[in-house]
Every structure is written in structure tokens, then in C-alpha cells.
Amino acid sequence: MSDTAIDKVLVIIPTYNERVNAPIITQGIRKHAPQVDILIADDNSPDGTGAVADELAAADSHIHVLHRQQKAGLGAAYLAGFDWARQHGYNVVVEMDADGSHRPQDLPKLLEKLPEADVVMGSRWVKGGRVVNWPKSRELLSRGGNLYTRLWLGIRLADATGGFRVYRISALDKMGLDNVQSQGYCFQVDLSWRATQAGLRLVEVPIVFVEREFGESKMSQDIVTEALKRVTVWGFEKRRADLLKIFKKS
Ligand SMILES: Nc1nc2c(ncn2[C@@H]2O[C@H](COP(=O)(O)OP(=O)(O)OP(=O)(O)O)[C@@H](O)[C@H]2O)c(=O)[nH]1
Ligand SMILES: [Mg+2]
Image (cartoon, rainbow, N blue to C red; front, side, top):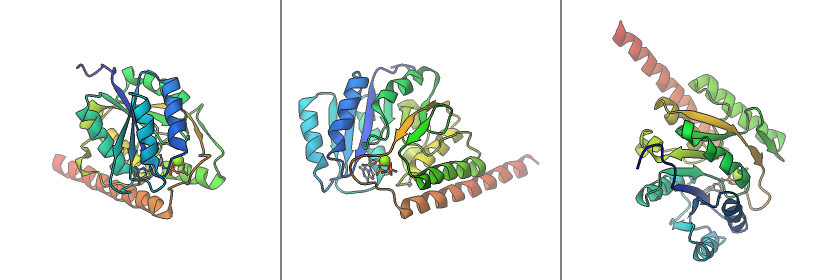
């Protein structure tokens, strides 16, 4: 299969307590991107999302379920989903939340950009992108997090923290994901950082991000702290590596 072929696309949806949202998001994807397959990666949700996902899969051969034993964070669920995609011969994966924040109608726009990209990133903070129904505090957190990431890591992305993305499997293979430890939303920054360092072609596409209507947010102070700590450490590591390069040259 050539590197540019994008015929097998798997949308991975991590779920934890999303029994109301799971049918809505899968239906939306099937409507707007009928050619793609879907994998629901559920961490044994206490609300029975796993059983709902099984019903969806039984009714539609495009839908699959990965049952995981316990809540282990969004990052671990995605890594397991990437492995599942590789094992099943997909060459493109999409990251997408279950809660409706990532609109299925934006998915074709992201996939369209793939011929010129290794990673396509849905962006709230480029021209044409926006958020709907977010409290000012969440907007400030996202904008602040992105500003810090841009300045401290030198990543040239308007939205390095977003979680609606398309990756070629060949790109993931170049990103050295074996030692990823980020769990919460830091996982997205981690992958932005690895993709940048690997010299991949990153393309940002404007999206409309809509705050969830149903179910509860898993965002917490711990998740924010994890991101802040890790980005800070990566920035120091980068400076150390840059200095070592200068010393080696002189
Ligand atoms: N499998 C799995 N999925 C998770 C876990 N934590 C969150 N998710 C899912 O990851 C997606 C994003 O989580 P959200 O709770 O929406 O977090 P967020 O988007 O940062 O925050 P809000 O939009 O404010 O709710 C959703 O589909 C969640 O169900 C987890 O530990 N395991
Ligand atoms: Mg969300």
C-alpha cells in the first residue's frame, strides 16, 4: 500500500460514560463520512456505554468496539486504538471525542486535506474556527495553554491542544509513540510536539467546537496540571538539546 493511499480510514472514539452520546456521534459520522469505519474504545464505563457500543456494532459493520478493562485515560485509549488500526490494516486514523464537541460535518473537510499532509488538525484558533457555548474560563484555559505551548516549545500551531485530528499511520510510526506517558488532554500536546519534532507536515483546518450537551466532562485540575508540568519539562529538554548541539559544533 502506498504512503499516499488513504482508502482505509478508522475514526477512534474514546469513551467513558458516554451512553447517550455514543449513538449520536456514530450516526453523525455515518451520515457525513459513510466511507470510514469507527472504533469505540471504551474503558469499561460504569454507565454501560460498552453495551450500547456493542449494539451499535451489531447493527452496522462499519462500527467496532474495543473493550478495555478500566479507566486509564484518553491517551492510553488512543494508543490502544492506534494499535487496533494497525492490526486491522487501516492506513489513516482520526481522533474524535464522543461528546459532540467535534462535529461530524467537519470530518470530510479534515480528510480532504490529507493528500497534502501527514497530520490534519482541527483548529479552533485559526481564521474560521471558533467555539460555541464555552464558558470564558475554558476559552482562557485553551488560549493560554496554546500560547504557552507556542512560546515555550516553539510549536507553530494555533491549536496544539485540540483533539480532532487525522493521522496517517505512517506518520504515527515516525513519532516514536512507545514511550508516551501523557494521559489526559496533555496527550494531544504530546503528539503535536512529537509530530513537530519528527518534521511531519501538519495542516490546521478551522473547526467549530461545540461544548457537550449530554454527559459529564472529564476535565479536571489534575489534567491541567499534568499538561503544564510536561510542557514545561519538554521546553527545558529542548533547550538542553539545543545547547548540546551548539557545544558539539564548536
Ligand atoms: N476510553 C476513555 N475515554 C475517555 C477517558 N477520559 C475521557 N474520555 C473520552 O475522551 C473524550 C474527551 O473527554 P471530555 O470529557 O469531553 O474531555 P474534554 O473534551 O477535555 O472536556 P469537556 O469537553 O469540557 O467535557 C470523550 O469522548 C470522553 O468520553 C478515559 O479515561 N478513557
Ligand atoms: Mg469534551
